[in-house]
Length: 125
Image (cartoon, rainbow, N blue to C red; front, side, top):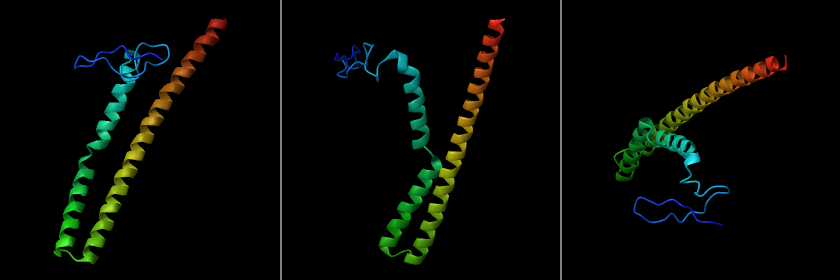
Protein backbone atom coordinates (compact mmCIF):
# COMPACT_ATOMS: atom_id res chain seq x y z
CA UNK A 1 0.00 0.00 0.00
CA UNK A 2 1.26 3.42 -0.91
CA UNK A 3 0.94 6.61 1.03
CA UNK A 4 -1.07 9.61 -0.11
CA UNK A 5 0.82 12.06 -2.36
CA UNK A 6 -0.95 15.14 -0.96
CA UNK A 7 0.92 17.82 0.94
CA UNK A 8 -1.07 19.32 3.82
CA UNK A 9 -1.38 23.05 4.50
CA UNK A 10 1.34 22.84 7.15
CA UNK A 11 3.77 21.43 4.56
CA UNK A 12 3.72 17.83 5.85
CA UNK A 13 2.94 14.90 3.61
CA UNK A 14 -0.44 13.26 4.31
CA UNK A 15 -0.09 9.99 6.20
CA UNK A 16 -3.24 8.51 4.66
CA UNK A 17 -3.18 5.41 2.47
CA UNK A 18 -3.86 6.03 -1.21
CA UNK A 19 -7.00 4.51 -2.64
CA UNK A 20 -6.75 1.77 -5.24
CA UNK A 21 -5.86 3.27 -8.60
CA UNK A 22 -5.09 6.70 -7.16
CA UNK A 23 -2.11 8.56 -5.76
CA UNK A 24 -4.31 10.12 -3.07
CA UNK A 25 -6.23 9.00 -0.01
CA UNK A 26 -10.03 9.50 -0.13
CA UNK A 27 -9.67 12.77 1.81
CA UNK A 28 -7.40 14.32 -0.85
CA UNK A 29 -8.44 12.57 -4.07
CA UNK A 30 -9.46 15.30 -6.56
CA UNK A 31 -11.95 12.89 -8.13
CA UNK A 32 -13.85 12.80 -4.83
CA UNK A 33 -13.88 16.56 -4.23
CA UNK A 34 -17.58 16.93 -5.10
CA UNK A 35 -18.54 14.04 -2.79
CA UNK A 36 -16.59 15.66 0.06
CA UNK A 37 -18.26 19.02 -0.61
CA UNK A 38 -21.74 17.46 -0.50
CA UNK A 39 -20.98 15.54 2.70
CA UNK A 40 -19.65 18.69 4.37
CA UNK A 41 -22.72 20.64 3.30
CA UNK A 42 -25.06 18.03 4.80
CA UNK A 43 -23.07 17.94 8.03
CA UNK A 44 -23.13 21.72 8.33
CA UNK A 45 -26.89 21.85 7.86
CA UNK A 46 -27.56 19.19 10.46
CA UNK A 47 -25.42 20.79 13.16
CA UNK A 48 -26.70 24.32 12.89
CA UNK A 49 -30.45 23.94 13.21
CA UNK A 50 -31.47 26.99 15.28
CA UNK A 51 -34.64 25.32 16.57
CA UNK A 52 -32.70 22.42 18.02
CA UNK A 53 -30.16 24.75 19.63
CA UNK A 54 -33.00 26.81 21.14
CA UNK A 55 -34.68 23.72 22.58
CA UNK A 56 -31.39 22.44 23.96
CA UNK A 57 -30.82 25.79 25.65
CA UNK A 58 -34.29 25.71 27.18
CA UNK A 59 -33.70 22.17 28.45
CA UNK A 60 -30.38 23.18 30.03
CA UNK A 61 -32.08 26.10 31.77
CA UNK A 62 -34.92 23.86 32.91
CA UNK A 63 -32.45 21.30 34.27
CA UNK A 64 -30.61 23.95 36.26
CA UNK A 65 -33.85 25.42 37.63
CA UNK A 66 -35.12 22.00 38.72
CA UNK A 67 -31.85 21.32 40.56
CA UNK A 68 -32.04 24.75 42.24
CA UNK A 69 -35.64 24.14 43.26
CA UNK A 70 -37.00 27.04 41.17
CA UNK A 71 -39.21 24.75 39.05
CA UNK A 72 -41.28 21.86 40.36
CA UNK A 73 -40.81 18.35 39.08
CA UNK A 74 -44.30 18.15 37.58
CA UNK A 75 -43.90 21.39 35.65
CA UNK A 76 -40.45 20.27 34.49
CA UNK A 77 -41.85 16.92 33.32
CA UNK A 78 -44.55 18.64 31.26
CA UNK A 79 -42.01 21.09 29.78
CA UNK A 80 -39.76 18.16 28.90
CA UNK A 81 -42.63 16.37 27.17
CA UNK A 82 -43.35 19.49 25.11
CA UNK A 83 -39.67 19.76 24.16
CA UNK A 84 -39.66 16.11 23.09
CA UNK A 85 -42.74 16.72 20.95
CA UNK A 86 -41.04 19.71 19.32
CA UNK A 87 -37.94 17.62 18.60
CA UNK A 88 -40.03 14.84 17.06
CA UNK A 89 -41.78 17.41 14.84
CA UNK A 90 -38.40 18.78 13.71
CA UNK A 91 -37.22 15.25 12.91
CA UNK A 92 -40.42 14.54 10.96
CA UNK A 93 -39.96 17.74 8.94
CA UNK A 94 -36.38 16.70 8.18
CA UNK A 95 -37.48 13.26 7.02
CA UNK A 96 -40.20 14.71 4.78
CA UNK A 97 -37.71 17.20 3.29
CA UNK A 98 -35.16 14.40 2.69
CA UNK A 99 -37.83 12.20 1.10
CA UNK A 100 -38.94 15.06 -1.17
CA UNK A 101 -35.33 15.61 -2.25
CA UNK A 102 -34.90 11.90 -2.97
CA UNK A 103 -38.12 11.82 -4.99
CA UNK A 104 -36.90 14.81 -7.03
CA UNK A 105 -33.58 13.08 -7.68
CA UNK A 106 -35.37 9.86 -8.64
CA UNK A 107 -37.60 11.77 -11.07
CA UNK A 108 -34.50 13.30 -12.66
CA UNK A 109 -32.87 9.88 -13.00
CA UNK A 110 -36.02 8.41 -14.52
CA UNK A 111 -36.14 11.26 -17.05
CA UNK A 112 -32.48 10.68 -17.94
CA UNK A 113 -33.11 6.95 -18.32
CA UNK A 114 -36.10 7.55 -20.59
CA UNK A 115 -34.01 9.94 -22.71
CA UNK A 116 -31.18 7.41 -22.94
CA UNK A 117 -33.55 4.60 -23.87
CA UNK A 118 -35.19 6.85 -26.48
CA UNK A 119 -31.83 7.67 -28.08
CA UNK A 120 -30.87 4.00 -28.20
CA UNK A 121 -34.20 3.20 -29.84
CA UNK A 122 -33.62 5.77 -32.58
CA UNK A 123 -30.03 4.58 -33.02
CA UNK A 124 -31.33 1.13 -34.01
CA UNK A 125 -33.26 2.51 -36.97
